[in-house]
Image (cartoon, rainbow, N blue to C red; front, side, top):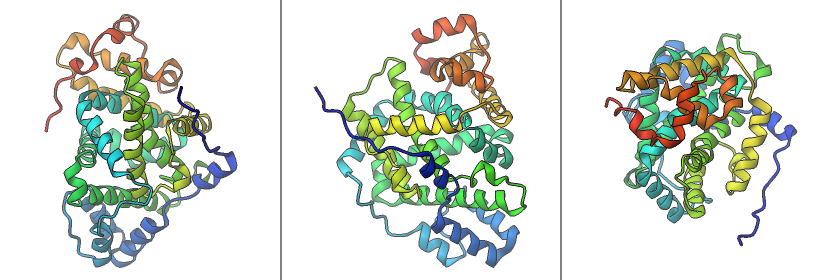
Length: 327
């Protein structure tokens, strides 16, 4: 019998503080870009962050994005390798978990969904955002990219993208500080938890139960990604039990109905439905979401209930519902 692993507590006082906290290192770089290039230059810089280019016209940006790739002290390379192997063996199922579980799970956080909706990047071009997310995942899940520095660059550019969104959100003075800082520490931790622990939970629900060592390895890999992305160590779960505890704290604090969450989910559903080749199966993405999320979260996101499909979903391999995404 495995001993019960210890877990830290995450008090409301701690989470309130981190909800008003961004990422000082990345935020300072964005401020410098703005000071040197003004708003038009910052918008061009944001576009550059969405490319695979490695060189920018400002040296301090290059120094950050192309810094020597060094793993943090908490990294265990063997566990990271095992996490990447686990992804490779299960990438189709994990892809479905990301689209039908992890992303809408993030939209359930009402205040965090506001910054996503205000940016209009997701609902205006959902397919493009899904492609960007997929490219990010496949980059950081390949061992060679940790050796050649590509994984580090990709993570650091996303880190700067988060800081740029914080700047854009606050610049015009329409952001309500009661929602927390845009793309704050709590929301970043919640998102990374959705991409790691919540994906693991979804795999268990669909009958693909990983071993505990596989789950811990996959969580550890995402912990390293989170650390490089600027998430404070206090919000990086040290084991699965702690990931469960942190998830419950964030969900209890943030999950509630919101128009933004419903709008983002509707846009995602419409895009996923376009991947379904059989017209008779168009309602299955909604049924899949509801099955994975559970009725409580599905209801607050406005996901329609599909009575017949809900009875069939548990018995259908999820990956056969979708055609391959265009490259």
